[in-house]
Length: 357
Image (cartoon, rainbow, N blue to C red):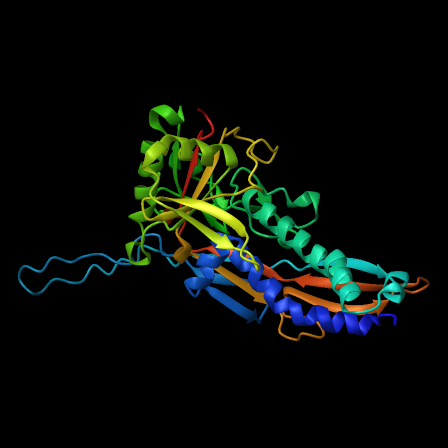
């Protein structure tokens, strides 16, 4: 008996919540952000959001000597507000009617799901992850999503935005703009940075320095808790530990297969990021290795949309099927209207040169 497009869609919709959660769990940064409760679902009210920035304490101390002093109520944050647009991206794919007509039974339906909607969603996931760590999303038209790579820009809605974390010293970050706020010496709106000359010589010491520089900012949010590194940098760290490996951590896939493994660095979970490629043209500073150090408490994730049948919830939501005019085929869409932003850059860090042996 042939499979109806609506039957396939019904089976796919049953699996979507599991696939969506798998995306969040597959990437340690997103999982940490969600565990911190920093996710806003179905955000409405306009194409962008504004958020307050607190890089330093908001006031000043008055020393009382005779009791008649007037408070020094200086507002050092100067009302800084970040701004970020939410992109809307749609991944569309077509299933030939012939494939549906020839699919008979549960095994055939399961095979169709694996070949079409599941493969489509996994590819969309990979596009977003690569954009997040490299900023190379223009290749696959997902350059609207935020990137950590400060050597390049992302484009959520027509205007280029500098990547979140600069791969340069604090002094060289000043006057650059990130999330609509210009970095100055006074506002503390910058990320921490260190460079390694040779991992065998100063690799771990420079990593510790960047880790503590970032961890001591916004102490209420805890220390840096998640790190991402390219394969070479991660292996340099692993080899440098020798017999001192503390313990290994991992995420398990749906059937218990290891999806992502990592090591501990101080109190942070350090993961290899297979998508991170410092040799890409987007890394114009020629960093020769990149390790991102993130304090998840300073990162936020939100999506726009709430009607699952129209504009959708924007969280990798499936829409369709729709008959393709003039073809024996059905079209599905995966809708993503989601964005990430950081409200305290100086609690995050980048270490470069970590691929040097």
